[in-house]
Length: 114
Length: 115
Image 1: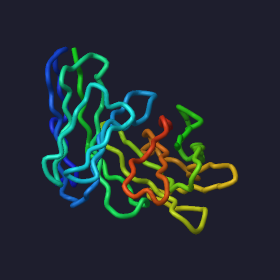
Image 2: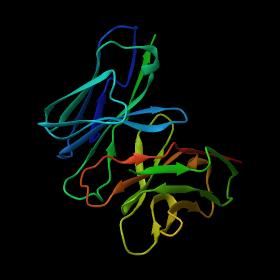
Image 3: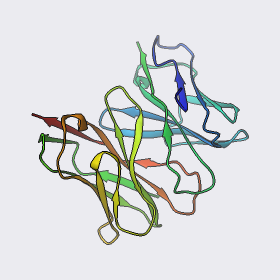
């Protein structure tokens, strides 16, 4: 089983709908992250969480919200989806302490908003 | 603030040729440096990382990278590529002493290896 699991892997939704992307991890890491990948733009940070009570906005948080339900679970919500939120979304985790720790990524969720 | 520039968006090469993927970074503080690879329809996996010590870092699948502090670069190299190396490659940084801070990524370089 994967250490970082994202569900669903693919989703098509309509404009204006609320959608939730889920991430769970078995690595026991405190830090969890949501990134968005668009062709030619690399990965942009949406939100990150240092622990259950610590949620922080990333560089492109507008239109998104998150929930850290437990150490192992971090969900990303689009309250009212719009077509330019069509992208590949990645969840990642990293260990604490140590800025040298690498990030471990899920397989991604491909979201299409029509 | 930190930023990462990957100087080539696409790099086409023939099989068994050498390749270099270029990465420059900007930061007012010292950073850790990473290279990740993304194969088609997969997530990102770590190729190698530079934390300290020797400036030449060896990673998986025959890749290596050299940290050059004066030029703020961390270029990725492989002496002989295979078709299976076709993927997107991302350079990333994280500031020292900011434990848990999110990685900052470049925009990626697509490596296409043909026979």
